Image: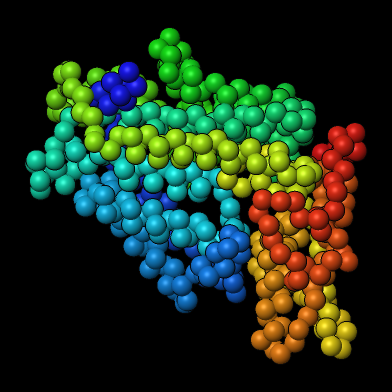
Length: 445
């Protein structure tokens, strides 16, 4: 039964158009990172980058090498759009994008992680079978259909993303609009909508419409009676996020994915007028489908499990940040903090107070004052730096953090040498002091 459903062929118009849109967007993502100065600020100007823990060896190319890196990535994105050497191009882009994702956390974004996943999925889809240079040069690969699973793998991925994004919003600071108010406070200067975004009723509208949109958009897109309404809501939601929060290509990627919910005839009539319709009864069962089932089950179990891991780690994820990444916890909190680092020579007991500006950019300084994993990494970096000078040192941090406008509270145990402790990604770090995230103690944002 499941074989007949997943491997039954359907019209591939949505996948073909999505490939073109996807290729254009990832091309713009790469080239835009150069033109907006993101590559310079994030990869070139800093003395070093905070890579994902375990990927310390993955550092930006020296000099202006990252410009070349991103240009090459942009070329592969363009090749994906044109359908030229498609499989090689999308795999190359996936590797390069994953590399730049894991080599830095200063500009961490859930959408960057989503792009890694979508690139991986696109690498296994037959997206170059029509309207591509590959099909032009090799007409034998032309197809006007695809297995049904090609749509569902993308739909299920986005369903997971949206559902967890909604569940994560179901906590007091979001529901009473404290977080939304903090997020919109700096937008008062926006033309026309700036004053509107400071109104309390608007904060409630954004908080609850955002939660409900994330929770319901995929089911409503799947149902024919509500599909057009859900699509119009998607346009408003994603354009608002693009204009107000400047979240890159994600809003447009999400809108492009909506094509998989509409009938193929609608997609053809708008984008592929010359493409024949597929009306046959066709099904092809691959010989390795059991392997494919196992691989898909493992992949989606990981996708479902990763956002749940913070429930098995002591204390509140809003405070510790343990389990925050890779969990679709989008724009959920505001953190501010202060930190001072002192280095103690193990032989002479000489104390040196660190001038963070000597090592870090302004954005990195903020992260090294508020994020426990970044604080730990900076302590490791300081120890390694002093080791090159022939000194064995301990590193202590005095750090206080405010979450969502609450009073400042000590985050790090100032008596623990962070340079000597190990990082365990699956357990709570005891040097992170207990939180006191009692809503009654929250300040009025």
